Image 1 (cartoon, rainbow, N blue to C red):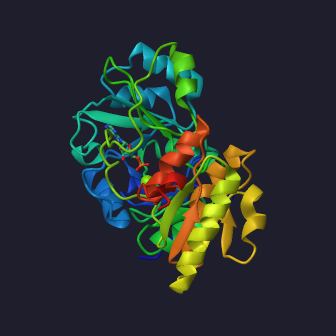
Image 2: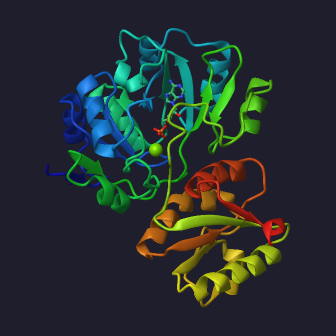
Length: 343
Ligand code: AMP
Ligand code: MG
């Protein structure tokens, strides 16, 4: 298949026609790039799973550009959902509703009674939904298991030849996927942390939101390997930055004896301590928003460096730091070396 590349200034009508005909279009969103198809066309949705190599029991998020579209897709909009919609839409928040099952195909919902819906804030994505008039199923535009793409080069690496069209929209602003909250039940649950934090949700709802532990897979699809770079990525943690740096150096020395290709993925404040070692920075600890938006691209750059083992850090703050750690822990397959682990 020939993949058409559209520049953001190109006419989006071409991409909209492709979607109407059941094709695949990659569009920028404010979170990460999305692999879009008509959410109501079962065959089109099937090709998303094929292009990504995504397990079929992992449901898709449906993207809309109006509240009329929402009403067409869901059985009810609870009061709490309305509060969240008024505060955070358009934006990086996905809500789970009871689905109109006769309208949304099983494939899109992975046979669940519910459906995940988001009203994105990126103008290109919104325009694409509006011109096509279609709700768009859009998971991240990467091969399943790899870090999500935040620029067009990484999309091309994974999906060139597998999709009909890719739209270039520059670097993704937010860089981690949407927060997911389940409002389909009386007990409101946070299923995936993101740029919109638990505190922001609770402040809006004025009630406690149930937030299960990071690695417990309560949302379908969360049990799968995610974001993994080729290198074995391991977190090194201690109660001070200096101790983390010292411990990393000890570990690197041991690894060097075995001639391994070692690197570190740290923060600006630590870079000077790793001058002779392949090192990448996630950004400054003072700017967690930057760390979030750099994270997936840095994981991809680790692959470019062809390293075998990489040591990285743990961010202990609450809020956005927890959302970043949710992704980094998955990328590390939960491997953490804590200082007290030293024999
Ligand atoms: P992504 O892989 O970023 O496209 O996000 C899709 C994720 O949304 C899935 O892996 C699920 O964890 C979650 N999700 C989608 N639909 C539902 C649903 N109906 N109920 C619960 N979680 C859902
Ligand atoms: Mg994804």
